[in-house]
Length: 378
Ligand SMILES: Nc1ncnc2c1ncn2[C@@H]1O[C@H](COP(=O)(O)OP(=O)(O)OP(=O)(O)O)[C@@H](O)[C@H]1O
Ligand SMILES: [Mg+2]
Image 1 (cartoon, rainbow, N blue to C red):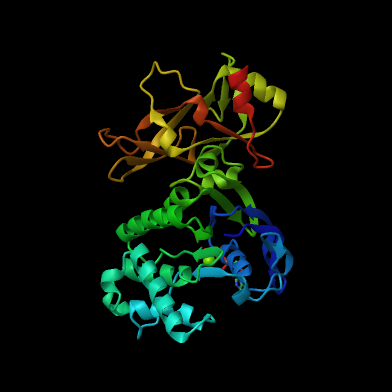
Image 2 (cartoon, helix red, strand yellow):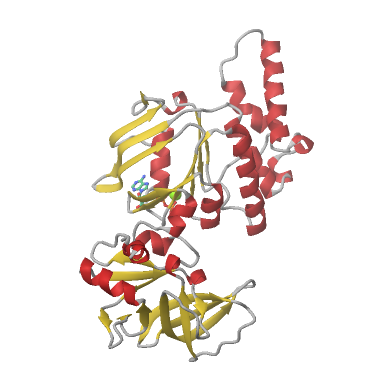
């Protein structure tokens, strides 16, 4: 198991910089997930680590050793791609052993063969493929094919395991199952892993640490729960979550009661006034849809939002309410509401959020501020 260090890693194609100075250390045995919108440089980063793409700038180290000019086959990397292309004419056994047979074998040929056989059966057992060991890919289910692809990469006992959207070809149910299987597999073999996805539930369940990328740069690195609860900036806030965080960027005023109101549709507690005035910053207020609830009066919420219902989506476990701020029909408010509530288009509603669920960002820089923490302390 290797520790991977990326220092100022850069990838350029012609005049385009697609990976723009990535600094990241992946600890031995750690499971890192790279998440970000299409084209942000996830695959390019992975391919540089694998040695499939030349590194344009910066340094890549495995266990302290510089890897920049080491060829792919000397990096001890196992890689699984989105279209995991198994050899169609070979059985599961053949696919698994293919990589091993090309490795130089020590000792007699018979011993080498016995050794290959042992490792194939071990891998088949680990991935629960023993009963289909003599089947060809076309006789396998999608999940079984996926496991053969994982096995083929793992059987050479790589130091580093790289996966690029390995589950995106599977249907939703199978993907959920494979996600859990991958997680269990990692618990058992604890290999240093970088996993690329744009599926949020995959990212949040699998990652020891999550890396959110945007336009070739890292925006935030952290435990999934930290990234979810305390996004570093408005990009991460809007990107993480399904749907992402509501972000309201409005001029704020104080009313005659001394309460702070943003564009007259959002009210924050009086204690915010002092803190905001002192900070002198333009702020963007962020609350996740799942942290907004219908207010029936009498509740003391940190943030109160007046809005009008535009549309209601039934999502099985909850309703997703699409609304706009009462004073601005072009604004957007998304809220999760229990399915037993009936809401009509055009209806006026009031939503509330607790203090710990209100995020304040600096509008100019987009960065998260700790103004709410200051209010809580005051
Ligand atoms: N061989 C190449 N030549 C030129 N540009 C490339 C090449 N490979 C990738 N790019 C560009 O680099 C950028 C990053 O691509 P990359 O494949 O790393 O994105 P990604 O984050 O993996 O996206 P996706 O989620 O769509 O897979 C894109 O704008 C892409 O067009
Ligand atoms: Mg990609």
